[in-house]
Length: 121
Length: 107
Image: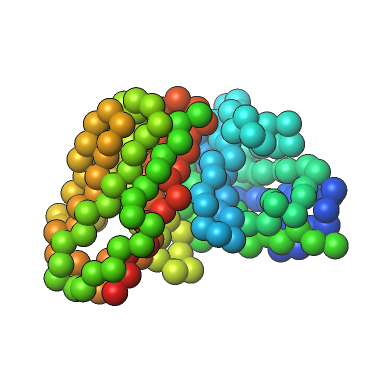
C-alpha cells in the first residue's frame, strides 16, 4: 500500500512561487512505469489535473498551466515536487499528489490527503 | 480538450434506494480510459471504477459502471449511509485529462 503526504506553505503571496513536496511515506518507490501526479481542487469543488513526472524525470503538464508549472522527482528521498509561478488568486486550492497504477492503469489509485494553499497578500 | 458534463448536479435519495449518475463527454472517450471517483467531506478522492466498468480494489459490488463513446453511468444499487458523497467522472485518454463537475448524492 502506497501512502503519500503533501507538504509546503499554506499561504503564498500573489506573483510569488508555490512550492509543494509529496513524500512517499509508505510503499515501494522502485516501479519505473508509474507516473507521479499533482492535481488541485478549487474552493468550488472543481478538480483539475496539473501534470505528472515519471520515474526518469520526464514531465507532462496540463496546457492551461504549462507556462507556470514545473515538476521534479527525487526518489532517493522518496519525494517529488511541484512549483507554480507566478501565482494568482485563482490558484487558491487544495493540492493533491497522486500515483497511478502503471503503464496499463493510468487512473489514480493512491492519493495524498491534500494541502490547502491560499494565494493572498 | 474533452469536456465532461455530469447530471444531475445534486441527487437527493434515501438509504436503500438506487442512484444513477450520468456523465456525458463532448467527444468520444475510449472506455478503457474512463474512471469514477468518490469524495467524502474532508477527504481526497477515492478511485471507484476504472476502465469504465471495473471496480477498484475494495469497492463494494453495489457500485457498477457502464457506458461507452460519449455516455457513461455510475449506478449504486442500494445506497448505504457512507455512500452519500460527491462523485466525479474523469477521462485519462487524450491530454489534458479532465474531470466532470461532480454530482452530490445527498440524503
